[in-house]
Length: 442
Image (cartoon, rainbow, N blue to C red):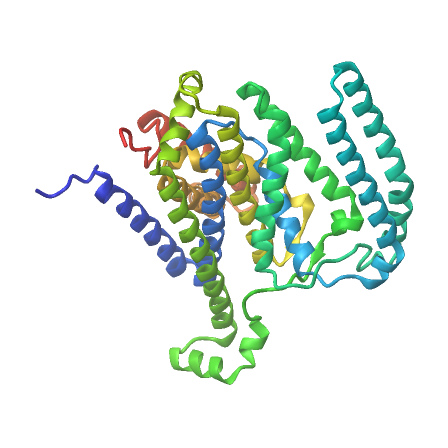
């Protein structure tokens, strides 16, 4: 007997095939450069949605600080790929090193106090004293060092630079930075109730963005870092390569357009390999005893705790893993853009949209999160030109200088917000568990 269309056996491949048809339609109707640009961002969005799905879909952790973890991943692109600014290191490197040593010594002293001082009041007072003293001592060395660093040719540098390594390594480092931040957040906030935990993650994400924007010595702040290294060829180099010119001539393509398509295809292959690896690992984890335990904790924490499961520890594990995946996606996005712009990290793009991807795709299902990442980002990008076309068609009978026509055409950009709301309403009404819902009874 043939499987029903509603069966996951056909439903999931059919949905992804439909998504491929939409991308091909954009390539034919607009341009293949636009289509491949959307594809690359869909791949990154799918990875980011997978990270959030691990936290919310596996364990029910309400994280609304996705933006902060993505920004830390983006920061890794600067710290890894940029060449070190030797003048800045000479001017303030020693001061920063001393300040870091003071912070490490203060942290070690706090650990010793909390381990060996038995009296709670003394332990608390000693911890507070070490924190305050360490802060002011570190600032004695930190502030002058930062001033000297930011004074070094601030129009182009004014920061320490990076390690001068291939930018692909920043993907792993971005995951580690985000994971480390998640561990610190988890130590403080995982004991909170879900709504308070959500507020804490949002607040900490805003703190991360504020620090990155204002600490110019780290990544130039709002001055941005441009011209980041690329793991793929440059278009201008391809246009001067005989083998590439022979290839585009054989295909009958324009060298300029062909080089752009080739570069975007290279990015797509790299991003797809990372996505495939993460999905494979996530599927194995979800279908393992560990994954069943995580879902049991999500569905009933008290029952899981009564059976001897360490709920807080498991929450910490999945929170760190999900954040690491978001950090990888953030580093990949910076790699694709070729620049790090802290001002572009907004909750609408890096938190709200990712949540919509997971909810629409189907929380608790890895393939649902991936499909949600593709669908939502595609609609987000194409809603504006589609809205402009629709408004132009509706007002075609009006004069060009008609105020109503001008207003509707100028408002076409807001169609994406309306469309996102409509998609959420329709999915919540007809498929509350998402387009590719979590499979029960596994």
